[in-house]
Length: 193
Image (cartoon, rainbow, N blue to C red; front, side, top):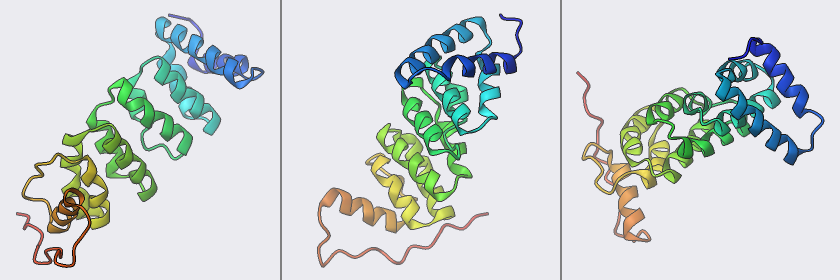
């Protein structure tokens, strides 16, 4: 472990990366991130950079992905910066970011961020997570939000799924909608005790 403070290490990292062209900068970042991880100092540096401006947060999420820090990366799934969020979402599958990180990010994210999360959930084939989120998404955000999760759901959706979702799923598997197919409008939400 190094004696330098995380702030000093973060500043040294940024200073070393600044003059380099992009390709060399990313290579140097990977080398330094691995070295800091081996010394046990990376998490402090990530936290320092994570509190910084968008450039510093972008450097931090790439360093976390290189060092395979799934926990830190998972905490950035709903970052306000689209580049940071994109890096975290792409690294999520490879790092094995747990479903709980996606669930907590989804719970309080704005609509644009939820759309990115849903795309990642579907692309990563996290069917159990999509199955868990679809009913909650409908109850909280509406039919359209729930329908976005359907491509990621398992084929055997629980019977609790709302009819709008079942009709969307039927159309998804049955082909184009015919004139005789109409959604079931008789569904009422389950009563909560």
